[in-house]
Image 1 (cartoon, rainbow, N blue to C red):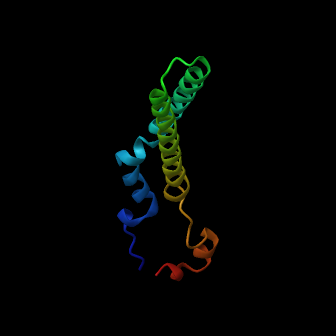
Image 2 (cartoon, rainbow, N blue to C red; image 1 turned 120 degrees about the vertical axis):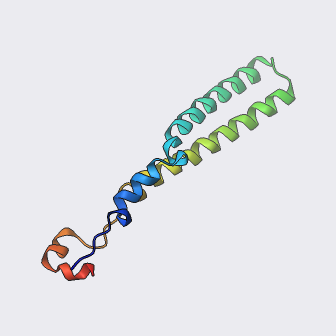
Image 3 (spheres, rainbow, N blue to C red; image 1 turned 90 degrees about the vertical axis):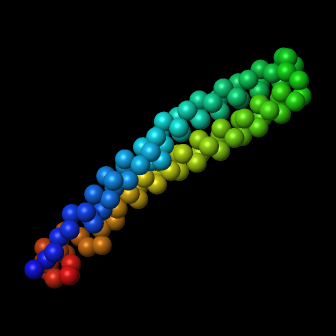
Length: 106
């Protein structure tokens, strides 16, 4: 007799983790920080070429650019991890192996 517990399956765990705000909003934050990165790059180039901003403001813009770029890459990695490892886990056994010998699940 095979004891099947639905709560321990990979799919149910992925559905539970999908409700976690850390994974749920990762795509939104990734897109937000990409937009902020382009805004900071534009402001940095505009300020450098027109010399409107002081040196301190230019340093702050460069810091904002690097921070938003690193945060966008971080949330990109989080969303990739969720899509590849959690939503599509690797199966221990293929369906054909299990259909030929169901005892390997025990």
